[in-house]
Length: 171
Image 1 (tube, rainbow, N blue to C red):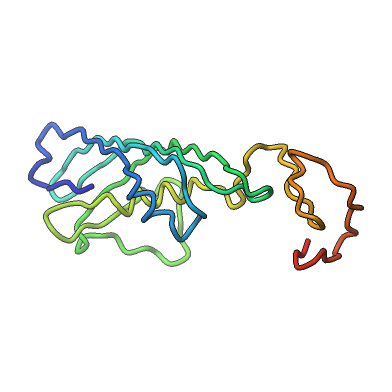
Image 2: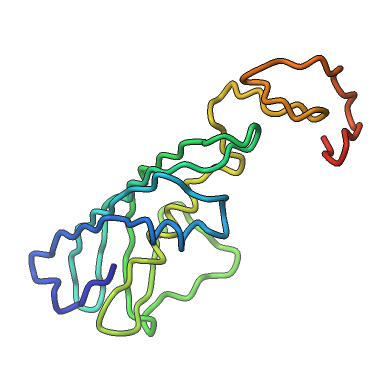
């Protein structure tokens, strides 16, 4: 996902990439358990003003991860708008200490005659994953005593009191 600066003409360019299974594997292997059925794409409009490159577009991704309650597949859908300014590393603005404004533009840097969008896209995908993904909003999860998937069957286990431990699971 690289673009050479010399390819961005005076009218700008439109670019797009398909996100491959290998991208998802590399991007998500440390963050989630086994992404499945991964697909997606990136579309960007790039314009250039001297050394600055303005990019706006979107990252779309769909994949499955493990549900945080029942361990079944949980679908993730990411439709993330992206707007960022790329500047040479030597021209990057210094962040003011303890000072963040809502209208500050997002800056990324480049150090050669090409821009790599890989980290930006990876960031958008990772930020789109919930902390505890769910297969569905009303997921009942697993029984902490016997492990029965409460979405498929009920069990006769009594409920745990708050703060009690069932086996090795802490609630």
